[in-house]
Image (tube, rainbow, N blue to C red; front, side, top):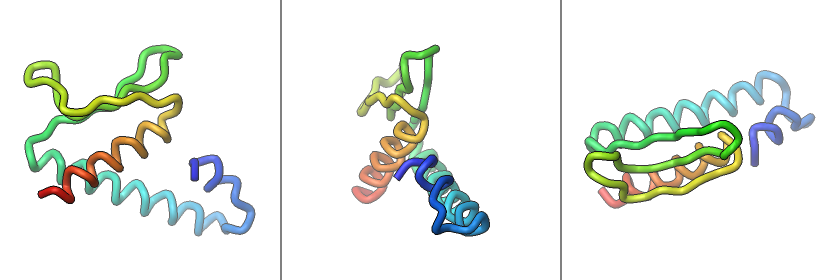
Length: 90
């Protein structure tokens, strides 16, 4: 489901849509904090109309995972799923 799907879902009230988005963002931010506590670097980047780059790692130490997405929503999903995979291994 994309953000557009959530925002345009007529079966949800405005409060339900806002609550759904806030909950998703809250959990994503918590996952990012947990990865940070493991001293693991990550980033989402973009360059003009080239889409979004998503990675775990850094320039100094190398990257353990990289991917790309056409939209920011897709980039967030990719990163969230990869973070969950890494945290579940801990």
